[in-house]
Image (cartoon, rainbow, N blue to C red; front, side, top):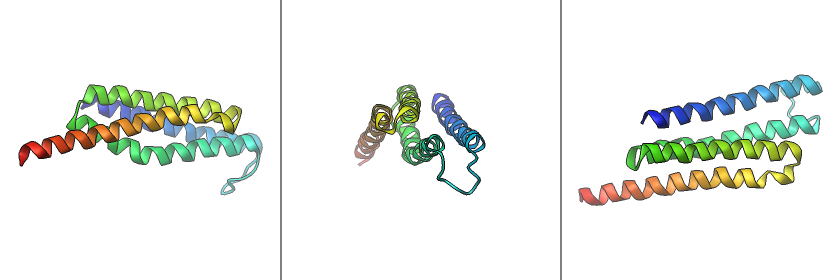
Length: 130
């Protein structure tokens, strides 16, 4: 489960870094808190950060359940795909919001694999206990 903990920490560090970048964009473009509207570059980085939080709500529990009920090393590998997908999402969204789809799809599919895999593995374990 150590690999799952490391990937979880990496995902949280990525989220924290994205948040730091939102702060940098606030300063660069003079967007005073609590405003969330202003320069389009700031707004894109703000949405990248917010969308990553929305994804983490499902990703982190799915990652831990997969690691516990299925295979922690495979789970960690799939978790790294999620993190890579968030970087792709960020790069695409910063260039043009219409280009965020590939990164979103990569991270979303990684989460779905973790969630479905954990559900199947937990169901299998429950079935064997009956």
